Length: 313
Image 1 (cartoon, rainbow, N blue to C red):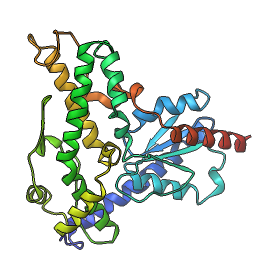
Image 2 (image 1 turned 180 degrees about the vertical axis):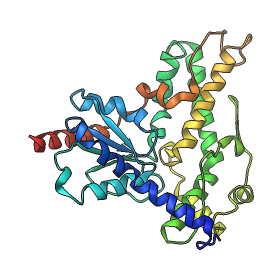
Image 3 (image 1 turned 90 degrees about the horizontal axis):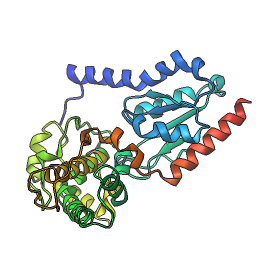
Image 4 (image 1 turned 120 degrees about the vertical axis):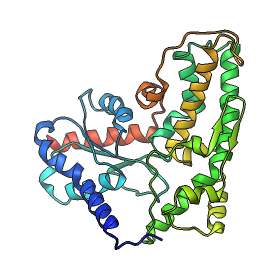
């Protein structure tokens, strides 16, 4: 267990505290310049997903985005702004990921119905659009059918392989909410440390001992807790509840494998060589147009924009 009184932890605490108010300070510096535009508070890189959608739903006005660092940063900014009526004429929208947390149930804040924004990029429908529009696959052709079949099979195998890690992380989140000190830094975590992804198979290459060795400063969980969580998460549509960055990384790796095979001299899975020039690594931006737009996002944005515009008159 981590010593909460160590100098390192005090520094980390101060850094986290500074991040919590960073979005609010940026808002104070800029809100007078953007009173007519929608001002959107997001966790991090989510602007690349929300930008076009908010613009289209808010009378085509250019939205201004304020990055708050993380979910707590957005929620803290919301509390600070709404503690005063001074900003009631501003058109403010707040966007957060659900993560492995309980629902916040606040109509003034949009919360993804799945784990995170990244999950919006990983459905069969989204991958189908990418294959047709970016890979130029004919929907009625054999290569399209092959790619979609491989995606369904590999995604199912991936979910089986990554379920233990998802359950372990979810348990760590549960522990943190009880006030028990744990240190879990997921920044830079790559799924290729845990699973091997190929077009013909996905293999699990870890166990609970490897997880604990890679996160040596995290709270040591009772194994039964992790097993129970894994059973709770064993639902039909795992791609919605599993960690979004894992889901997107799998989809990116799959598409990269398709690209590598089909641009090779003798493709192993597809009928002929093709030339494809897309940057799959920039998926959030590159494929934003294909990502899912949920009804709840449309309803939230329209309702907030209409209500706030009416109040500002």
